[in-house]
Length: 238
Length: 295
Image (cartoon, rainbow over all chains, first blue to last red; front, side, top):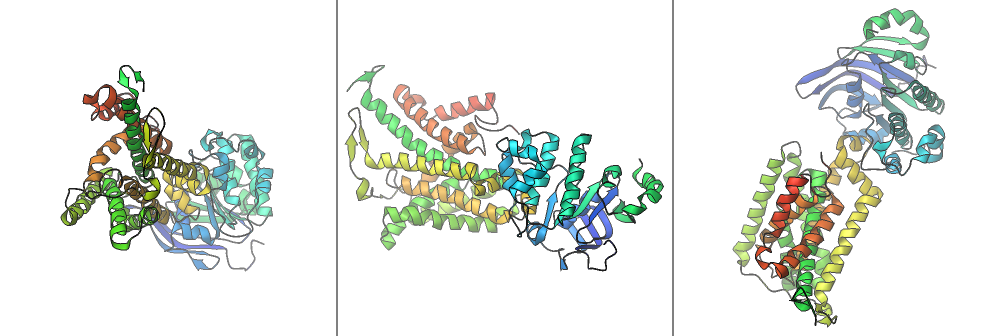
């Protein structure tokens, strides 16, 4: 299915981005096919998070092309991009402290039909159901990550951008998140994942792009992972 | 008639009533300021002028269009709120990235301009506005005489304040507002048009000020400087309650009105300064305000 000639769901081409004066992305090019889980790997500061934010339209300035389902997103505002059917789960999770768990969960509006209903979200994350009236930021780190992922599943977005969902979490929770990502893939979601932890990525991803200095420098499929471990160590410094 | 601490009950309850009336206006105005500050990060010094505009629009609706108090209560907040929307789109939206000081200077300047324009046309002596016929007169409660209009002001402003609190703290729309106050970028990335929400929030806060102005018209005279007098006290109320806290603004508004009224009974010399003394003490002990969350 990875080699299907279908048009990609997301096609990023020559993407450049700036924060104020600093030029972060220097022409990022990659694509994600419908139903794939694609992982961006790279060291801190390689531009992975900025790539997600640029797709979402929340960096200062962008140039190049980001096409989603054939439509150009450069020049659109982030709320319009979300309404096109992309949902973003930020690295810092973005749980609102002035909202309880239920309000956090129901916050992102439905942008398209076909999102998961609450029952299916609770089936993925049973912990959330018991904590609905707790203040959002009173949850544990793992529960906050589940809430941050769970709330974007309701929206009907077809493409999920997940920024380091395993960062700082215990191994058992990382396993649960891996299981969730595989389940979501099985339900037809397309996922663009940013990770530093390629051992985790290897359990969920179809393909990898490696980023360095604001560019994509390498790509390979999950089946080629073993052949590329040496290169990965070099790029990631692990 | 009886007396407490040698104070006749008529005087005590009379001042308590005045305190509650003033507290109603403090609460409505500081609530609007708190809502605006929470969303826009702007200290809206135009608030007093917008309260005054509310009273004037009610006056002009009656004089020019024959629209009575009840119609003014509905039309005025919308009309003045629309001027707020225009101000936000034209000026305020350019200031969000800058220091608080710029928003404060701009809104202060706007207040001077608006008050100057009204003073130019209507003088500063004040124009009368009749209590609506339905609420004229009053009733004797045994221990004091309660004018109907004043009872209405207290009840209606409490209802408006609690209604606003309910919408912000207990509804989906309020959840959007609270979330956007915390992290507007992320809320926008969920597909919510945050800039439009900010514009409407300012319009709503300004509408609240105008509503207070309509309610004040039959009690105080309609005068271009009526907002300038009250807004300084209201800012002290907001500082005491804590910037950005909704319930804090409401409770502090009513409480300080009552404290001010009681001070008039027991120690009249201090009645004009008591709120500022409390403000100084609160700032020393809890700089974020009684209900404020320290940053």
